[in-house]
Length: 442
Image (tube, rainbow, N blue to C red; front, side, top):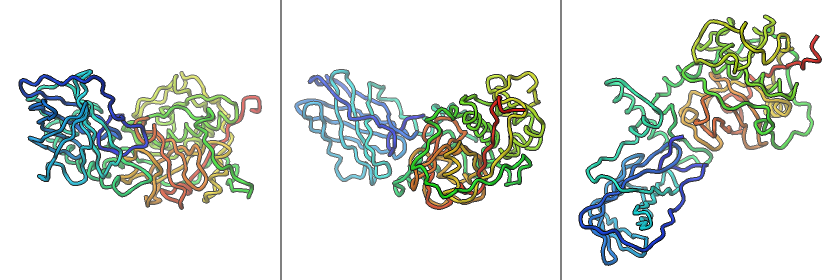
């Protein structure tokens, strides 16, 4: 994950820099230090230009360029050991809500540490600055974003993407100022509009009735529910995967559901091939969209095995079916059916107590696109456009969901979603396959 400076986070931030030694820099001409730090992918680049450093006083400039940006020139600091107390005055060089809380000169390694606080990101983070050219300009946060994520644009597209990126930064800042349960941050989707994001990544088909032999609808039987469940800690869930720019979320939810069902049945965790679903399942539309249980139906009715991911690797685009040469991860005939889940919280908690559950959600809101951590709250609709894997819950608090956008998104590829009401349609189209153990197959 890219690092950033002025952000509140559920992850650990850079702590206060410990400085040793007592020497002062010898300043015969201006000396400059530059660097950056942070969290949630929001980066602030900081430069300190020292004009003088003698007799307990410091003359300096401090400049920041990133999530907020500031420029404070010709400031005076009082030195006490390694600490420099800077008088920023009332000239407005620090924007409202920004505080440069400390400056340290670390004589042991000739560096500067600057700690900044922001009302939008109440976690103070220290940037360690090292010697730099005084003529060098600080990169913008968009420059940092492009470098961090390997983004390359052509011509006018660069300016257009920067405008979208800056708009998303303002959305992140506004959300983090008012939401205490979750945080937003910069990720690989920060250069996309909400509409572009939905068109590229959210391609779940409308709900259908699966033709797989339905074993019934799972309903809560009134028994006491576990306080918490998490299949990702029980060996039933594979590593977080990345669908890339293919609208194949349904294929990832299909394999994830089968991986969990196979683990429950056999005690073995095998990573299965999403690419096989994209290439071979002709009842769905590959990267153009589909439904996880329609995929289970196809392989059940066709009496075909499910390939291992290692033998049928993911390419992120539609291709020609080549399953005849793959290694089976689930043998032909092992999918015995599908169970749909009732549309209440208790139904869903009861079901996921037994095994991981594939679900549909609505994920076309900015909060989901730029989610970084915490429990996602607020209204997000029930028009299901994305398929994911429900791996557990904490009763009365959140659902824990595995996504397919890589481990740099969210909480290492997962999201916690509020259990308050049917937000994002979590209850509306949940299902799971049944997989027979080899010794029980006829």
